[in-house]
Image (cartoon, rainbow over all chains, first blue to last red; front, side):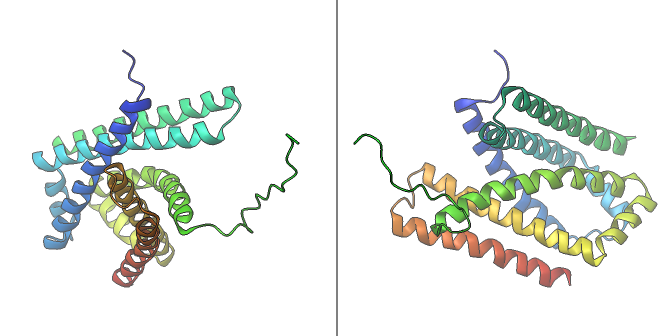
Length: 112
Length: 125
């Protein structure tokens, strides 16, 4: 099976990722409200703790999947010539993949 | 008689849109806006976690007036998108479908997004 996130699968991905991100946003807002991080060391040590690393990875996984479903919907509606649409969809997919790698590298650098 | 001569009037600046249409279009526009701001967010995360200097650079950047204005816009987009999304989720469970309720929740979403943005503006200034 190809992983394409279309149809009913996309519907579920969009909703599940939305609910997860909503929870993460509440968690992050409360965390920053209760414990503001004013220095680099505080910020870094918070962001590199295992639980937060897992939460950030899960958040970006949800965000990038959510972006794929949403941007794909927009392109299917407006990018009419099939060639242009494929080009733009490919560009979006490549950018999302690139951002996923970027986030993993940011978090991996913290562990060293 | 098959061919109708009724005028087709699709000038979006002159159509008076129902409030739900604004919520819906807003959901899409804010989604694209948020998608565009994600790479910026990842870049700021990257810089802020790089070293002391990067953290100071990001803090300095976020203190600029123009950047604060951009942040308020992004907060508005997020608030509208989030509220409109919750409205969508509720309608998946058939909550709020009657027109009166749907119009009221659409007003709530449109004004709620602006209210959150004003709150953010006050908090940042």
